[in-house]
Image (cartoon, rainbow, N blue to C red; front, side, top):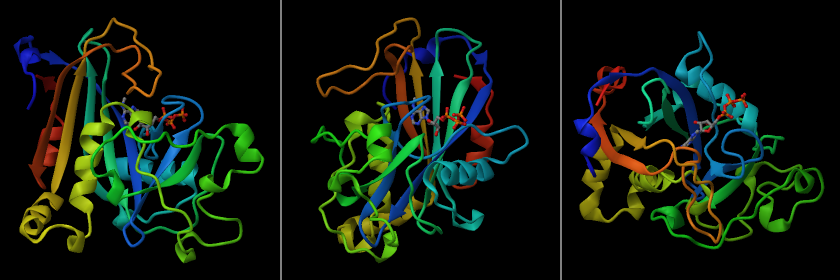
Length: 269
Ligand SMILES: CNc1ncnc2c1ncn2[C@@H]1O[C@H](COP(=O)(O)OP(=O)(O)OP(=O)(O)O)[C@@H](O)[C@H]1O
């Protein structure tokens, strides 16, 4: 746990708005798929694939649907692995819902990743992304680029080939954390570290890794509202637009089984 001053606020009741976020992993090829968002919420950022959970829809069904709509990959429900949740909250008022974003990974799917007018899928190196660095910026796709010819560094799958059958022609870049939502720098490297194939994890950390795999994470971030600092330039990390400074930021890990009772809390802090 980091700063705790928000704990002194009176308890409040907030609604939660549910979203999903799916991160496809190709462990054999040491790579992770993210999408560059071309429109809507999060435009101009790389992220996992996901969206709002619709009324009457289960969280996992929403995650499968959004992944398919945004990337072309089709996953069966038993292959969805729930890893945790982000709880994103503004403390500006008591009426704004907490964004509850359910994070999944998948490593089995049908189909090949395809660009849509909303998301452009791009593979990044998994093992090069275990710590957030502000490395060389990843290419920024534009709708023109997508409908026309893509630069070779951008092609994840040449037309007519199956992604899984391809040799990797080019070294993959690390995940461009500085081109993602700011708090991704906290939870995503932790998640990826826990997923590394055991033979790449030092012997003494292997048992710890096995334990961690069984845990969901909850990353709760509170923001003070009111200050509208927008995405910054000069390669700096962007900030939550319209939400202002971060107030509380902590990551918890829960054993499987405790997750359901904790995620439904309505009173926070
Ligand atoms: C602020 N910190 C954040 N960190 C990581 N991920 C974040 C996020 N904030 C939102 N997200 C994700 O961004 C997508 C928005 O989805 P969004 O396009 O609004 O949903 P959906 O596709 O249902 O909407 P439309 O159909 O276009 O209206 C969705 O995956 C959601 O999980």
